[in-house]
Amino acid sequence: MSETTAASSGASTAEEQAIFNLQRVYLRDCSLEIPSAPQVFIDSSEPRLEFQIDTSDQELGQDLSEVSVRCTVTCRLGENIGFLVEATQSAIFEIKGVTEEQRILLKGISCPNIIYPYLRSNMADLVQRSSFPPVHLSEINWEAFFQQKMSRLAAAAGQSNGSESGIILPQ
Image (cartoon, rainbow, N blue to C red; front, side, top):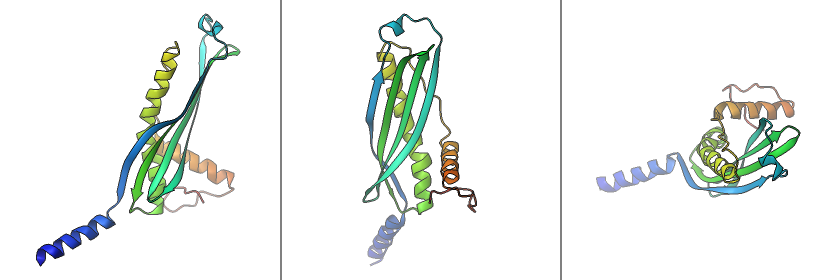
């Protein structure tokens, strides 16, 4: 009888336990444009790189969420575009047994931190296979990125940063 009680209490503990699992990582979208080819390969101008990065997420139901990191890199040679590479790396995560605030933090910080190395690798490989030196994207502090994004969203919505926990949550 004590075995049955122990087994049932163990099952209830497992049900209450927080779950955060990576289900799948995939390259959702990828494109490379070289509008000035073949002249770009003989141009001796100093290249200037411009970066844009953002994250997004969507609920899939059954405690599953898709989180995506999208990056655009533009290489300019003088007035011409050397190349433009754009990629979206996504992943499906199981997130269960956490508060809504924890869920937002996981999707805004932890998930992009897991996805980003895949995106960096795919973009560097694509650029290098196109006969350019590889572009190695810098490491990102996803906590700071998330806080900045939430501040921009709050400012755009005309809200103040009056959260007691210091975490700005989307409304």
